[in-house]
Image (cartoon, rainbow, N blue to C red):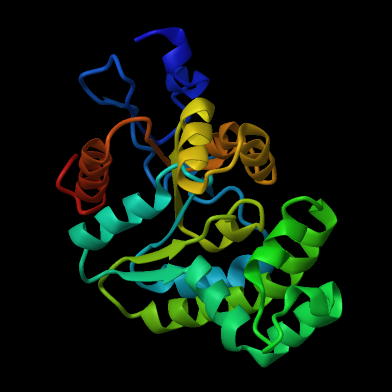
Length: 265
């Protein structure tokens, strides 16, 4: 394994769990799991980044099984990882923020009215439907416009998320929140744990260009609109390194679920 293939964080044992793959590696490298709920100086060390305003919702999320946030960067393989989790944990509940955003921008009159007030009639078709391509072209090239859209969408998404968590509080199954911009929006404060699906910048760029047909500049602009993966890696509880094939991603998902279910000690 060469230094260029391996992220800097591999050598850091502050991360609870890291599965790493590279083109020259035939095995998985796993770093130790932090003991959740351990004490440091008499204080609960489990969730050091939680803030006071989130305690009420955290009490909901902690009542039953853990609420786990799953995030990543664009084209890092998060959706495929979620698919693996669905197969491994068929009884689990999954909240999909992207799906909720699509539903809100399709049928929520208040959201659509706010988008029209903010971005004008030009982002709507003649029959009154949202022109997603037109809106996307605006928000990906203007950070301020992107923040305005986030301010419209994120509060109702979070309300739906909290309602799902409320329904789940007495469940004996896991609750997963699939949130692409989890760290960008402070959503990690509402999770007991966070799983990050990441890959190298080169792989991310290549996948995005192949998937969308964008040139390198266009793909780079979309990636730059998100928080850097290297920063997210420092914050996540579990990191899945996805430079490899889908089969290995499924293997890592299986390892992680076995860890959660207590099959690996």
